[in-house]
Figure (tube, rainbow, N blue to C red):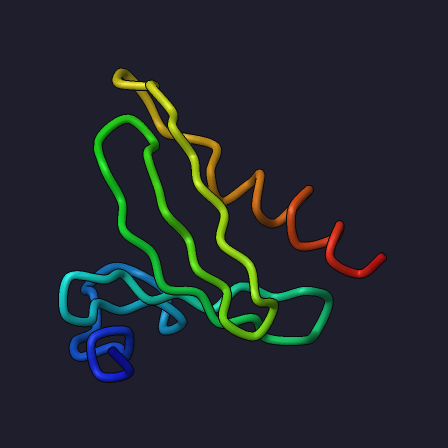
Length: 86
């Protein structure tokens, strides 16, 4: 499981904080200046299962936005991660 959730390859055109493991996307978010590791499975339209091991948290999105960008990262950055500070 550890190997599958570690970046095995960089993704061209994406930030250095993103990569791809074995069937999992890998990304580092930031809560202030603190890095927060995440691995996630993503589907079409904004579906996502995001696992944050350091926070003992899983966030599930069942979006259906099939015509444009999805706000999943914005929701994680603006609402979910800040709520863990309380």
